[in-house]
Length: 249
Ligand code: SAM
Image (cartoon, rainbow, N blue to C red; front, side, top):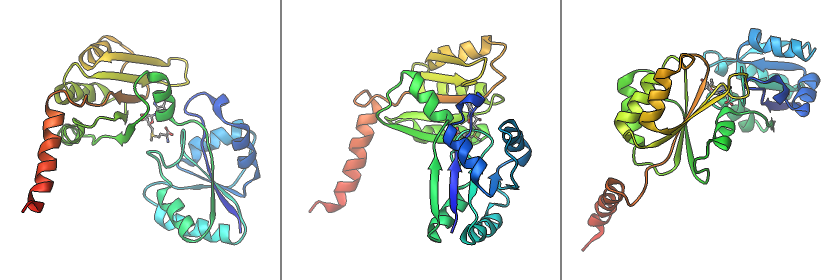
């Protein structure tokens, strides 16, 4: 029986591909990729020539079972995504879940991940964080999702596209308040890597002034709510009371 390797690839700088990732990609029988054209360029850069299968959200279920059949027949497969670590806001969950159910060995080959890279350099608390991936694209859904998170005390981490970054930051200001500390990491590991940080309203103003703000990819990090200050604490007390009341004699 073969192995399913989950291989992290660079998020910009190609030198971030590990030597082990390169060896695994060179050694497998088949590479499953989110976008075979995009990943084909990476393999070409590495001078690796392998059969490639497209595995994306729309065909993952059906492709997963034939990929796993091949692994059971002895082939090894590497799963990669367009950038960073597969399954992190990327396809692969269905495949890995099914592989484990079938008793297939799944081995991670760790490497770049935008949220970990961003958090490691942000200067926000890292002891507890909540990765939320992409918020809903439409403003109403996005605001609702932020409202649900407004009392969360862990550092919040989101992915956002350059098209929506200003709209998202405007909603962060209106839902969390302009004083909440925010750090944005843009174009990590690339030539124009930029961090924006400060109070949410100030960060929004920096984006509005920066002509390059509409280009590049973003990780958005928001400091958690301060407990004890204001609402957070009283709401917790209400919740505790609501839970305890039915138990009282
Ligand atoms: N699997 C990837 C990972 O491990 O980070 C994430 C894939 S997700 C589809 C793409 C999002 O990740 C982008 O919209 C952006 O929010 C974030 N991202 C990816 N590369 C980035 C980079 N170089 N700088 C900042 N954010 C990045």
